[in-house]
Amino acid sequence: MTVVIHDDPKLLAEATAARLIVRLTDAQAERGVASLVLTGGRIAAQIYAAVLASPARDAVDWSRIDFWWGDERFLPSGDPDRNETQARAALLDGLPVDPARVHPMPASDGPLGDDAPAAAASYARELAASAAASGGLVGGGAAGLGAAGAAAAAAGAPGLAAAGMAAVDAAAVGSIGPAGSAESDGAAGLPRFDVVLLGVGEDGHVASVFPGHPVIDETGPTASVHDSPKPPPVRVTLTLPAINTAAEVWLIAAGDGKADAVREAHTATPATLPAARVRGEHRTLWLLDRAAAASLPA
Image 1 (cartoon, helix red, strand yellow):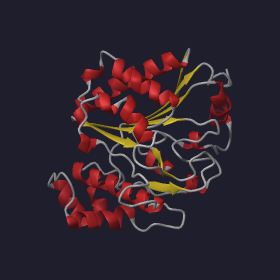
Image 2 (cartoon, rainbow, N blue to C red):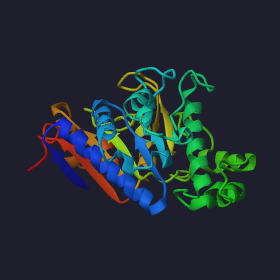
Image 3 (tube, helix red, strand yellow):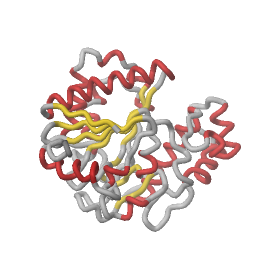
């Protein structure tokens, strides 16, 4: 785990944007494609604006980036409080992205209606389909999808055939439990995430995984969240096990209102805050301004 402290939110956003451009460029140099999990919030909007303003932004082939979301407020499409709405306005609408590679979480006025557990299961299926199509399944490779899904992945199909999707449903998602999780065997059925961006809440939450909420113990890739302590009350989120499959996890916090949560995440034993329970497979970065880092031990 690495902690990087910048003087103020503006510098934090600009430095994080520069770091992100380099990381995505490196991933594309290695594999031709890259995958980024987006977050929401004020500092995220500043980072996205800094990416757009960067003269280095065109080093990334944005048409070969898969964009996912770490969580979403379960609201109608286009609602200004949706993380998708913020990310499109602040970042995606200004870049030459491939619409087929932009993967927003379902909205409450979409085909699934206001069924949040179904929305979480749908997103888990989309994750699994992407993993199968790219052959990049986390947690056991294409074999985790069964024979039909593996065949579709091996063929390099842009999507799964009906038999392959059935395999995804059975092997990577399973049934929806009472808590609204997309039940699966660990993180099977997830594509590679090069970077997961996470804002850190004043209570130490990340994505829509809140301290003391049952969602903190979910083991499937996605979950619906009800009775969220922060409005709106209904949300869809990646779970901690899904986040922890990422190559790199970046936790970002600015302002003195985050200082207590940052301190607790680094010092409390055992680790109870969601922010303290996320780890990238290869790297975990805490990107802070001086106010958010003020209470860290010297």
